[in-house]
Structures are given as C-alpha cells and as structure tokens.
Length: 616
Image (cartoon, rainbow, N blue to C red):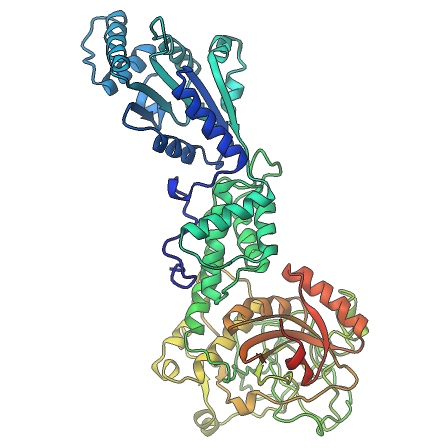
C-alpha cells in the first residue's frame, strides 16, 4: 500500500526471517561467525539463545546460506511436532528418516548402528550432517537428555553429527537443572543474541529501507530515538512500529515520519497489549493493528481524496435543545471593543457539550440563546452567537474555569481559543502571510429557500458521515467534500473514536451548511495587542496536519492553518495563537511540544515577514 508512496520496491519491515534484510550488528556478527565456526570445526553441540523477537530464526536462515552442498542440513522448526512423544526412540527414528535410513529395526541398538554407518559414509565422502533445532526451549527435559545421547555418535577422529540448539533465554534456565549438567558441559560453544543499541537501531532501520529500494531518509531523528526507546532494540518490535508508522504516514500524506506518528502507533498498540518494563522482556510480544486508528486512517483517506487548499471547511451551527444547556452557559455576552476596522468575512464554529458527533443548525421556535465562552474542551454541539459592534479581539476570553485548568489556558497566559462571545474552535486555510480565526457571527433561522439556496443539508433519519459523503450531490461537489472533511475534523476533536464512528447516526433534523470560501475565510493583517503565535510545524499537505490540529484543539488551543510559500515551494503550516508577550508564547510552545511530542516549534510575531523568514 505505502511502498510506491515512499518509492520503495518492497515492504521493508515485514516480520518474516528474510535473509535479504539481514543486518549484522556487532553481536549478531559474532554469534553467526561462532556458529559457523563450530559446525565447520565439528564441535558437536552448539547453543544459541535470545529473547523473543531478537532474530533467532533469521540467524538460522543466514547460517544455512553460508553452508554449501557439502553439508547435509536437517532442520526442525517445531520439536514438539517432530519428536512426538519426545522419547529417545522417537528422536532417533525421526533423525534416521531424515537421513534416508530405513527404520524397520528391532531395537535402538540396530537403529543407532544404521544411523552411524550412514554418517560415517557421509564423512568419508567429505560431507557433514548438521541438525538444527529451532525453538529448542520447547524441548522437554527428557528430550534434551536424548539429544545428548545422539551427540555421542562419533568415530575416533570427529563428531559425526553437529547439533545446534537455538531457543529463547528460558532454555538456559532449564540447563541449570542438576539432571542436565552433563548436557550443559557438552556445549562447546554457547552464544546469546542481544537487542540492538540505539545507533544500531537507526542503522537497522536505514539498512532495511535501503534493501527495500529506498533512496532517501524517511524517519526523522526524533522518531528514530522514540522507536529505539519503545522497542528496546528488539528487531521484531522495531519492524512492527516502523511498518505501522509507514502505513499511517502514507494515510496522512507525511513524506517524513515524525515522532508524532510513531507515538500514535505506540499508544494505540499499548492500548491492546500490556507494556513490559524490562529490556530483557520486551514491552510487547505481539501487536495487532488497532481498530480505532485504522478507522481514523481510512476516514482521512476518503475525506482527503478531493481536498484542495483554497477551499473552505464546513461551518456548523445549531441551537440548544430544551433543557440541554446548563445555567452557567446562559449568561449574557460582555461588551467588546470594535474590530470592524480589522476584520472582514467573519467565520465561526459553535459547539455545546451535549450531542457527540453532530454538526448542524437546530430550528427550534425559541429565540437563539446568548452564551458565555466555554473553550477548555472542544464541545460536541454548536450554539449560536451574536456579533456586536463592540466585539473583542480573539483573546481566549476571561473564563476562570479555563485558567484554573492549566497555566497555558485562558486569558491569564494569553491562550487564544476564541473570543468571549465565541464557543468552540475552528480550523481554516488562508493565503500565505495572514492568519485566520473564528469569531462570533449573527445567525438567523434558515427558511426553506435559504436551505435550498445556501447549501444547507438537512440530516435525515439514519444519516451518518459516511452516508452523507456517499451522496452524489455531495460527492460531485468539490466544495462539499472538504466541507465534510471539516465536519469530520470537528468530530474527531471531541468524540471518542471507536470502530465505525463514521457510521454513527446523526440526530435527525440537524442542518449541515456547506459554506463558500468567502463565508469561511478572512484576512487578518495583524493583532497589535496579541501579536505572538507558535509555528508548530509545516507539511506538504493538509492531511498531514489535521491529526495534530485536532489534538491541539482537544487540549484547548485555538489553531490556524495557513499556506506558506518558501522559496517557491508551497507548504501548509500549523500555528497556535494569539499571545500577548513572547514569554507567554514560549511557554505555550513548550506545552505544545510536549502534547505532540515534537521539539522544533518556534515563536514568531504575526506579519508578512513570517512567510519570508519563518520557514524550515
């Protein structure tokens, strides 16, 4: 799926023991060389151990490739199935059958004589028999004893059979038993596979990408560090994290995989499997692709298919239902200074925490309510607001409830999450050099003509996001597709993401409005009293920005998306604002970096110079 997007010829992180992808760390090279030396020098019994996922089976495959036709390789991948009841007779009969020796003998003595004759014949012809037992930790104590007896087959010059036991570290625990001391003493070579260190983990990832045909770096430095930290250098876990990260990166259009994508992968996987704390026991032994994130990825792919940067997003309004608004939100709006000289084409998204996943206009008969801002969370249901000629700048309001939640919320520290009369947040795309923000705007109850003329869609019984997206009149309208994507982004920011949430039924009678670019966007030259913003990061397309924007919204930030031209190259930039002073913006920057697990946000003053000097 993602191979062509990243210009790869094959998938680089499959969890199959493919020798083509063999990466030889210092420890791995030493173990491989020791095993080959042991077989070539007829050392008899050889032991190699390693934790789950460290590459034991890949080691065996690599070792087999080093043997030429003079070696007769007998490999057992599941000793329990191969040896049946695991008695010495079972093991001897299995080995004889693999050598092609007829096992119709009366007793073990005759069978041993036949096997020994066959091995001596191989030795005289310059060939050597090698028995490799994978998953050797599954062997019973009795089977291990019998293998010791099998290793006794020799002549006066050499061991006629080389036996390699490869298994997990628990095999070493078994060998500490008093009953197995004789076997333990027979191992002439014992080696242990170790997880990769930090630099080796980076080299391992780069090596696999190169073998897969990659010509450029895909994972950012911090992403590589996070992969090492969470995988403990275990190759199997590295593969799982990288493969899932590439899939998500492809889905959101990220040419470079950053730490944010990797962190999302790890968080989703940890939600399914309990993390182990120690390095010797990796934090995950098996991961499955989480349904929740897969649902999000599929929805983003579908909604972003026809997204264009110069188009608007969905503006959502709906009034309160009876009894659904708490008393503390039904207060009058305070008077606010005039902004008419600086703001045109106002745009807002209103919300109310009572109706998850809905976005529309309610047409109740009661007059529209005036509400105080509630911006600590992205609410679930829109409220209506009024615009006064005395409207204030988008400062985040003076809601004490917000300021008490975090130092970086509310007017106290300059967090811009809306105006005092605004309830909710919005994301917009505007031309480079200008910021866009939501403001309260007067809404009237649409009549049937308004609904028909201005692009409203009335939610019918049984409608869901996916149902609406599939409608021909929506699908064929290039403005409605990104508008519906906007609805999806709002939904993601405030509802619990669960399997099939895009199919969740919306409330019948709500109205979705597909707004025009003129309705949705404005140019804001500069905010003189709150001029500071945080440039979070830039990406090539909106799909890469959207998940991070939604996450900041969930954390109470007012975010902005702008188009930026850097040396003739177009980028989409994610910003958070506005802040009164540089220290407040720097404080917000640190918190944003912590939320998104990034380390390269920066603080700037609003103005045209941002586009000239503020790029990567």
